[in-house]
Figure 1 (cartoon, rainbow, N blue to C red):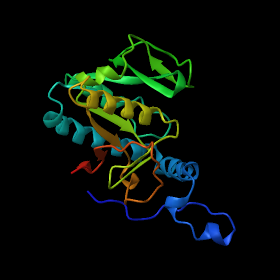
Figure 2: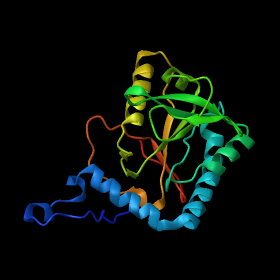
Figure 3: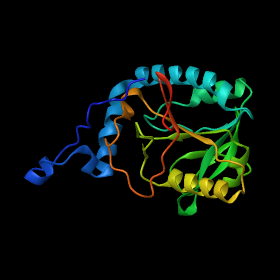
Figure 4: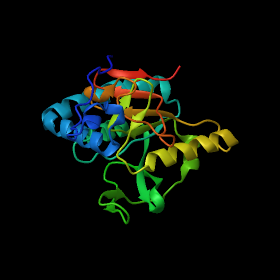
Length: 227
């Protein structure tokens, strides 16, 4: 699996200083805008093709990395890698799946997903979420793998998210539970991105509160990003 070596083509202002900036210096929101446009340019057929390949690789990989057959996924939105068919396949293969729901103060909780689960409008975000019992970060003591949405991932495991900080807060909280011994260990963090979104280290800015992932899933397969 190759890392995309092409730099992000981020629009610049007309100043000389701006013209000399690298992609890593550009504001995150500007980079997200470029990446979202590239996702739309892929088109639905190509997005579905890559998503189907991701699902096949993931199901094979989970056989060795999910002994409890429990993981989280996310409900894809817009031009994200589609997860609808993946969720169905995970359920058919006997996996227990939880998906995130948004809470106040940009926190996440988790609800069990299954085919036909009732859905309702989120009280804090313009999305529909499954209805049911909500679990906090301590649930991660029972979870093997967390599928983490991302706009891009680099070769060191750094992740560019959507900008809300929900997953960064959740990952930090889960790591703290593992460090305190409240849960035995944190689940493996695996981001799903399109092939062009796996990038060289330094392709986008990383800040202190940004939380990295352990591995990345693309249409080419799963790549471990930690030693």
